[in-house]
Amino acid sequence: MMKDNIREILQKALEIGRAEIPKGKVATYIPELGKARADALGLCLSLSDGTVYKVGDTNLRFTIQSISKVISLCKALEVRGTEEVFSVVGMEPSGETFNSIVELDVRSNKPYNPMINSGAITVESTIVDYVSFEELLDYSQKLCNDPGIALNREVYYSELTSCDRNRAIAHLLRSKGIITTNIDTSIELYTKMCSLNVTAEGLANLALVLANHGVNPLTGERLMSPETARIVMSIMLTCGMYDGSGRFAVNVGIPTKSGVGGGLVAAVNREMGIGVYGPALDENGNCIAGCSILEYLSQQLGLHILN
Ligand code: GLN
Image (tube, rainbow, N blue to C red):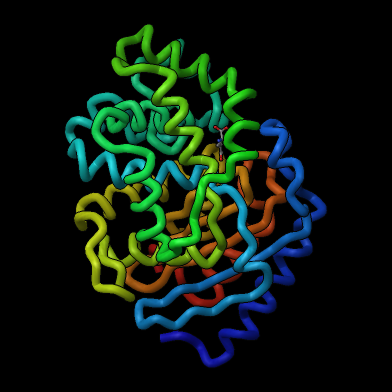
């Protein structure tokens, strides 16, 4: 049941988020991302009955970045199965930054989880010979209920020509026998998936499908098994906000995934999907305004998973 004063709550949430923006920074390590407007901010709630609430810049396009890790993991679990996927990637928080390489070399052979770069590149390597980029694009459009999603070529080439660190990770993974397919094609697929142009509204729809355990309630179409949705939401809860995941779980308690493009996708089990856009990031690479917005919404609407 949505509160009568929901619009007021959403406006207030946006104000709270906006106040955080000056403390954040737009990502510049992918040069093209540095062009984003730091003060852009949008929030969208998508409910199972088709109701959509939007405030701010909810139709502005930005690149999905690491939120694509959620989509690729869904596809990999559907196509390759749980056992196969988790034979090469773990399901534990890493406690390191999203593009860390150190723990992979000294602490573990498998990447810690599919939400960090090493894990996601590994996940792509499990599907690269089974699923084309076009199929993944089509899957992304269906999950987000947004046929307008396309590859942002500027961001794609900007990252592809500056992703030495991800290539280093991929080489290390091959040296350990975790990646057994062609490295370049896995890196290309990973980088293309990160470069899809989405909106906050589309992300809210993606979250709604997960929250609804794999079925898009607006079309009735099943897009993944309930098991896949449960696994993916569990990993979002424990690892989706990188080394800020523990604090976020305590304060917000909603399975959420961030991307350095400024997006957040948050799946409120059985209730709704939330999408946020705000490119100013905190020190963990998470949308700084979005973290405060979700904390406020969680309190006001009673959305914490352990409520
Ligand atoms: N494409 C980005 C990278 O590999 C994604 C990172 C992110 O969104 N956290 O660095």
